[in-house]
Image (cartoon, rainbow, N blue to C red; front, side, top):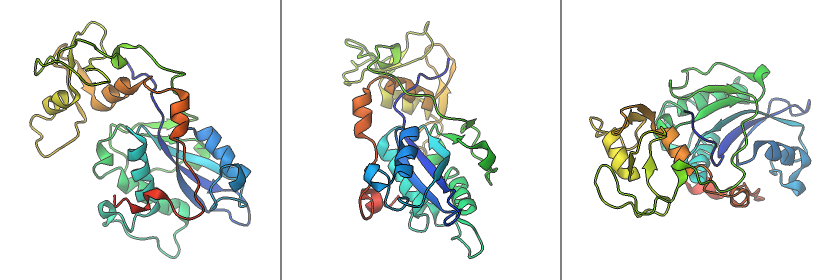
Length: 266
């Protein structure tokens, strides 16, 4: 069973097709890739960024998505924009004089996907323009799939699915205490499995034998013994909890100077 579509948080790479500026790139965050690309090409007055305004057309060629929150995506965006300032990317060599912007950003991305916390997130690397595709070196971790074409839209509204239920009166199958979280318990996605637990309890169970890690990648369901990906569980848990109006509020703003995430030392 695959995860249901949840809120979309993506970090994209734009490529400039204007002959005067061809080869320039731009990294940004979005919850709606199609609309964001249109804004960039419509100019700053229509919501585009000042760095891309008047230099189009721009093509969104690549997007990384699957972040658990807008903050996680924004931190990834900041580090991709400022690899020299990120403490996690100190090992990445700066851009050489003869290195074009596009291959440089792909080189940085390849390294970002190798280091924590990004190497442990349930991310997807999606090429929106297959003719721009390049193999990353080193390749992404095995749990990061390669996809092509536009991403599927998220849920139309609130859902009452099993993974997003409020779970009133539910008890954690691990600690046996009531689950009083507003979002309810984390549940096994297999319909015949009654297992449910606090998020922290299940994370600790999955991380047995890996005390140095904070975020699990996968584990065995204590109830039905099926192997589960942590990222799929979180996406199912979040699916349908936000309306389209709430997602709109997460969309990027285009300040005249800088970005509020410039202060995040990721």
